[in-house]
Image (tube, rainbow, N blue to C red; front, side, top):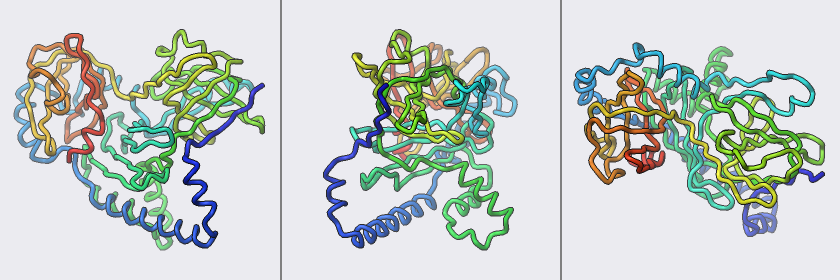
Length: 386
């Protein structure tokens, strides 16, 4: 049986340069780089901003009321239940339905914070976008955009955009940037630690490659979706689990026990286990398969009314869309994304992320289909315009 091989796709030149430096010089440089990263982190953390400005809602609220859009607290259950099922991640659930020895190589269900890794190269991701649901209501409150500015394989800068401000923003900033907790009362330390964990972002910007023979395979419920997981053994006879994405997208790919697999992706820690979230994989003798990690909702409806509104420095389409009998707000992204002007009565199919903005739920569209044509709105467009 082939054993697991783990490879970090990092350039040999970087490794050679580090190993030829004196130990003292390496240590000093490491300290300097850490200090620089911490300084940049502090600067970014204390300069958060709102995704939607208060002025945006002052202009939109009368129009929203005229179109009969219910506030989040009174929204119909149909979409609310869908949102909860697909995106509720704050409680960090994971566990087994079958605790037999042959099944406990990984969990039967688990949740993780949806994260998009952007601009990937052979050895690393240039950035990551992570959504946060601080109150675990299934609708996201903020999003952070992380960057590896010095290309050393670790994220060292980020911008945070709040969709919703619950009045405790100043306290959250203090929690995030505080590094001296020795003098805090125990209860305050625990509360601050929980807040830090809630908004904890990814650190490792590297793309990891693993290969081996599939020893286990099963379906798992992941953030509301049925995903295919495989396990490959290492030389210590422990198992590394690989998430290959939604089962429905893998039909006909011959992912079976006994086949050799090479997968590339990012590591996540779920409970007490490590998992590789693959962004691509290849079964021996086959072609490379790209994994779709979209975490949003898939919805179909008809535009009731629509208008263009400045969001940051860019004009966005904000629309009222009738979805399963409920009027829902949708941010269709920059108007320049579309070749034609969007109009009422247009039927649309979209995928998007539900966020809370003041008392409203808004779907941030990431992919829109109109009349057989598909328009992709990259998440980075939202984060880079402010």
